[in-house]
Structures are given as structure tokens and as C-alpha cells.
Image (tube, rainbow, N blue to C red; front, side):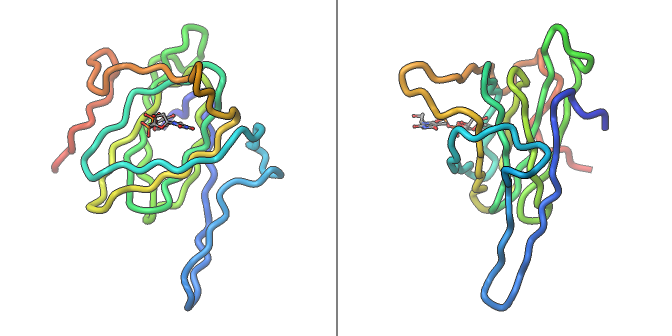
Length: 153
Ligand SMILES: Cc1cn([C@H]2C[C@H](O)[C@@H](COP(=O)(O)OP(=O)(O)O[C@H]3O[C@H](C)C(=O)[C@H](O)[C@H]3O)O2)c(=O)[nH]c1=O
């Protein structure tokens, strides 16, 4: 898969023991660390698609810590060497992964687990209640070449 320009991933490591498990997500000494604005959690119910979202200033660092999601990215930046490219990641409890999404890259996800997916997003800007850095397109916009329907085989 050709990674969209500016997108980075970090393979995470789960450390289980008899009490439970621990997983680091993002450290300020990570190569990909790009500043801290806030960290929040958001959840998605089974089968629900949250897309397409875009930020003009903010970089997202998305990690699914419970359940599983299908994360989709779409590069529609005019000056990007990867304009038109779509990336997909199946991530969560069965694939612990952090995906860094730069500004101006459309993104969203579908919960593909039977349980509600729990996502931790560490972002580079604090949320501005008066003027949120949130821009959206319809989840099923045919101009974006990613179909959220399940592909049976
Ligand atoms: C991000 C944020 C939101 N809110 C409020 C605004 C709304 O009243 C409510 C739900 O927010 P939103 O519709 O943005 O939530 P999601 O649809 O889960 O959005 C998230 O999921 C998708 C896929 C993304 O890519 C977004 O960047 C991410 O924010 O929480 C706050 O009060 N503080 C915050 O930091």
C-alpha cells in the first residue's frame, strides 16, 4: 500500500500479565510526535461510520484501544504527491496501531467489531468550541473512492 504523504504509523506493543494489560500509545520522544493539544476518547457503535472528517490545522494520532475499526484516509490535497490515494487500516484490539493523520487529509472509520469501539485520539490542537477545526463530507460521498460496505468473500 502506498502510504499517503504525511501519514505515519506506529506499531504498538501490548504488555499483558495476570492483572490485565498495558500499552503505551504516544510519547513525546517518538520520532512522529508533533506537539500536544489535547487527548480525548470517542466511541463508535457496531456498524456505524464516522466520516468524512478533515482538519485544517490539526494532526490526529488515532488509536483504537477497544474493539476494532476500519480506518479510511483519502488524500484530496491539490499539491500532494499522493493526491487521490486511499489508505485503509484494520486496527484495534487485534492489531494495536497508532495512525498519525496530517491536516487536510480526509479521514473516518467504521466500527467493525461486535462491541462498541473505543478510540483514543491525541491531537496537536486543543478543541476550539467557538470555531472548531472540523470540516466534513458525506460518509458515502461517491467522489471518495472508498466504500464502507462490508466486503464478503
Ligand atoms: C473533538 C471534540 C468534540 N467535542 C464535542 C463536539 C460535539 O458536540 C461532540 C461530538 O464531537 P464530534 O462529532 O466531533 O465527534 P466524533 O464524530 O466522534 O469525531 C471524532 O471522530 C472522527 C472520525 C474524527 O476524525 C474527528 O476528528 C473526531 O473528533 O463532542 C468536544 O466537546 N471536544 C472535543 O475535543
